[in-house]
Amino acid sequence: QVQLVESGGGLVQPGGSLRLSCTASGFPLDHLAISWFRQAPGTEREGVLCITSSDGITYYLDSVKGRFAVSRDNFKDTVYLQMNSLKPEDTAIYYCATGGLDHCSDYAYPVEYDYWGQGTQVTVSS
Image 1: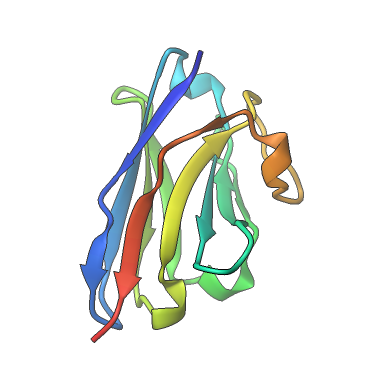
Image 2: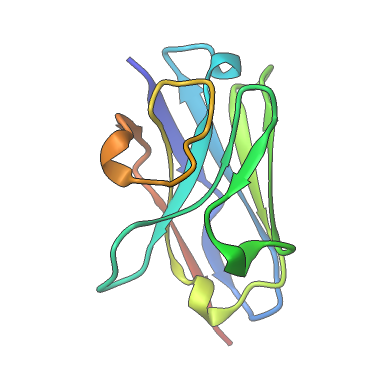
């Protein structure tokens, strides 16, 4: 059973940065692709990006390209989402998730993911 725990959310001003962490237990992280999703109030959960077990990256949102980056530390069983140049429209609950595979899908359909973290709130506001 894979368990995921996010941390690192908070309140940040527009233009600021945050780094989110997703720590896994119950299964070796180095075998898993990890995706980040987000959900703003009144909207559907959307995929942000994904990192494969071999550090390949797939972006699901064009709006975060050039601002968000993802990396992993398999020794710490942790995936990081570095978010720079944050905008108010980035405000959402951010989740990490995995479908138990080592590769990323071309599209991020939440229903295809079996394991989710509890989410961490990111608020971008002045």
